[in-house]
Image (cartoon, rainbow, N blue to C red):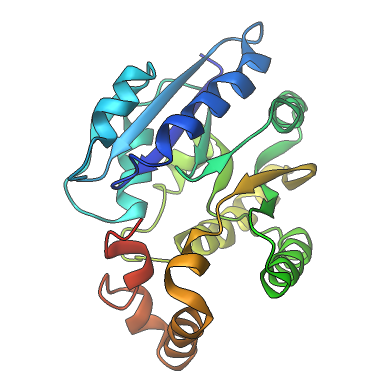
Length: 240
């Protein structure tokens, strides 16, 4: 199988159905290129996440420890594809983005990558922040966690996402990918022609003050902040 699409999901009954429909429509780009599968990792949800995923035709696996790196790794462990793609449950890829993904996976020169993002919502400050992140992402070759793709063999060699981290695990993953890509003479691509559409719900739910407070704590105590679910509350308190 060419492609395994993994969606980590914790209490995502509000947005999951639309996300899975967009993924299935986009993934048809791979129908004549080895095929694809859709896996949802239910990360100990207390709502209808698993039922919604099964109704959409996804294979559901379960991860009892509420941590996004573990959920992604658990989904990948059950995958059969040569390439892994991780899409967050509040994001909607387009067929055009998957077309560029197919070109990257078939190029022979790409080992892994991500995508720039296009946020929902009209808040100017948020859109400026996303624009800044997109520029940083392309310069540093750090992929946003909401869309990551990687050759399965490379993912396995790096043992996936760090399960010591409750946030920023994607940045750690890309930092470990870079020397592997250099050794293999391959590249890391940040796709940018068709950005991934993703929700601005964290900003709507928590506001700038709470999110900047988390950022401040991270800057003061990065090691402690990223290794504690309590310190990464916007990702783990279940608000959706």
